[in-house]
Length: 355
Image (cartoon, rainbow, N blue to C red; front, side, top):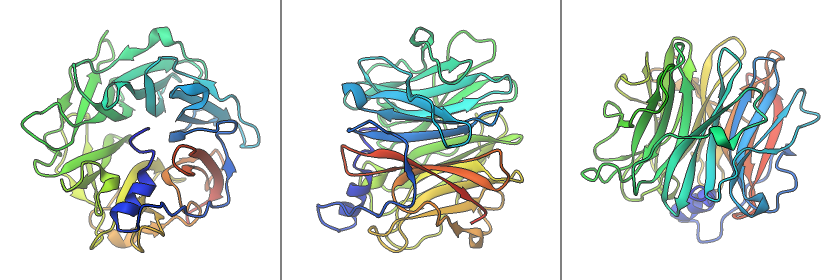
């Protein structure tokens, strides 16, 4: 997305490293966004029921920001990429899931003007062909900036989109996480509501990532003070986690990063390892902004056992790391963003774990 496009460079500048971004070394990986000389970001990764692996992301290829999707059976050959959106607006930050019936669901945000936009949704029977005529506008309020959505579907078929909005609540100057709901028999989306149980009244809550983890929904996000409006511009940020049985009422949030000093924790994601355990993955700078690392922490017990934190050395550098298990036990697909501002690309790597 445009706001995140300079994330790594701004992170380095905010930490006092000057105006020239330091480009981390690309780990052993392969270029996924082939043939795109411009910006590619915001990967979403999914293993489908049939074992096929899908990656969705936004790309500026073709002169307009749109969502693209590709898939592979074994990683040796990728389909597409296929263009999913065709709006003249900018489409960013896809969140791709599949339900028990095999239907693929996709949420993203669309800018109609800089820093003004809404959340959108569509569905597909095969994950590769998408009809723009079936797109649904999730949020509709005028003059808002709704962005970075993450999508889940409950066991009864309810769709829930969590997203960030900065100006919906004029009495609160901080960014807040909202949720929009569509019931299984509903023809339209309910008006979004703020997650008041987890939002801070004094700090920004940002970059949410949600997943259905067994019988609960788990949400992880970034929190930082108001010295900077965006998390990657702030010299310090932490991750928080909460759970819900139905996605609307949430347990009190728990801080899951225990870093001291100016350490940035960004771009959290959730994935399931072989054996069923769920883990949070994110980018952190405990050794300084020129040496970002990827860490993982089990969701179960994460608030009481920070010693369980491990570095994922298979995926160093870059940002927006996303992981999905393959059909081979202990084998995973990792995807991330790497490259200079304006020419970022999507990279991928298959690796074995635990790591």
